[in-house]
Image: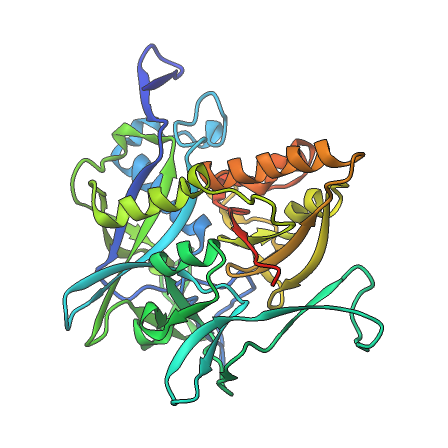
Length: 413
């Protein structure tokens, strides 16, 4: 147990090891997108389906200060020597989904984008990894010159309308990292099937008079994380959580827009936690071997600046990638009481495919970067660790959970 001193002679006990917290929504939740939103006629906003990691970290910090009001000082907030929550770090987010029909509980992650829904010859649905094809002179494509491979359709027939937001079970994901190419459909869940959308109409309240403002209505879609079939909560990997945060047993925490309530508790040893640890220690028993190709799966939103050390490393070569349009990410400063600067980021599920340079000149460089990537996979640290100079220029560092990855094998056949 590590202890850091405050201004007085008292000490703050910090849980330096990784712990797991379960957040179970008790009400509808609303998570704002990182773009301007103002009240007014014809204003409409839909909640993000996944709580932003900055929101979770902010909720935990606020919960700590709510339970320890004497420790809150606006002037010393975010001071590494005086703010007990300064080093609180989010390392990952998983979805714990209970199927109420058969009482089976499973953990899920965002489906990798190179895994698609297909239909076999008997009409059965399943999921397959897209095939890889090397670009040659016979293939005419409008792609950047540094791209050497492309993803092509798998062996089975693609389902025409692909689900927009699919989750993959952690069991299937571990197999995916081991280069498995085919998965049964029952290991996937469409996120739209585990939430119930509920509309809400509100009106802006003046911060000065605490009265309603004329024509300042707004319309939002909130999410209830329960349906007739499923019940969903979030498992969060956390490091450097102050012991006096108040999470010894079940607690009530405020989270998201309007400070809605959720139940939060420390997770005891369970099958779900064992699976997360198995995923983290995957590379203790497995390695790339002679494989030249490997993939990096973005587990959490990753600012574009975080990727630069990979693209500029002489020991690696980007072969191809699978991504959606970058999204804006940001946060809210408790100290400044204002939004933080937004950044463009790649979303969870993005796949970056690299080959390693095993030549005599670059062999040591390649081995060095691979060791670092495997370390990030095992420890849940951020890609930001690859370039310490970048961290000083970014307003939001790795404590917010950005830039977490998993490394996977790729079969070249």
